[in-house]
Image 1 (cartoon, rainbow, N blue to C red):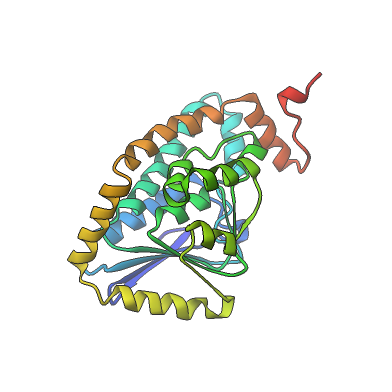
Image 2: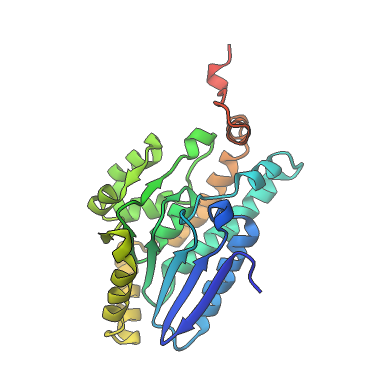
Length: 264
């Protein structure tokens, strides 16, 4: 039985629900592996028409589990382990991005860091008006390398620079204007909006939707999978720096980081 997610498929609608609310759905490697298996299993279901990605708790996903990342930092083969982490995450983003049915991220809470990557890998994103996105990686001495290709694809370089470099929270309204979100509703109306969207998608034929999605991806992002693979190395290398170790330690110790350039 999965430890970190719940899944079901009914009447052509597949649901994958992040289920680690006590840790704000932070992504351990084992968590991502469960998600990979779940998406692969859904893809194999001939009855699948649409896939929903949802989450338990107040936070959709807080990104990578920084405690596990800190363990990698103190490991003698940390870089190798970080590369493995990047590989399983890359596989997840690639599977979501190319799944031959429409994928819908339904956000009732914020998404940060690696959680933003999963959102961006979905075709359609709907959210409640209390949601925000945030890419705080530079504050931890690391980069959002794996998220960057998808963010540039969905929002353009200008918006990507703002999100990647500022580290600020980007509220639901701003995400809607950037084209990252496709609809924003009141919290109490989100479930009804999700259901109406699913009903609309289900009026299309499975083959027509699959052909349409493949065509759009071929026109708009023909090299996305290659870019994601290239980003694995960038992500692993960024975690190997002294600033990355300091940033992770500072976060876990609840103090301000002392970056290299600030040392006298």
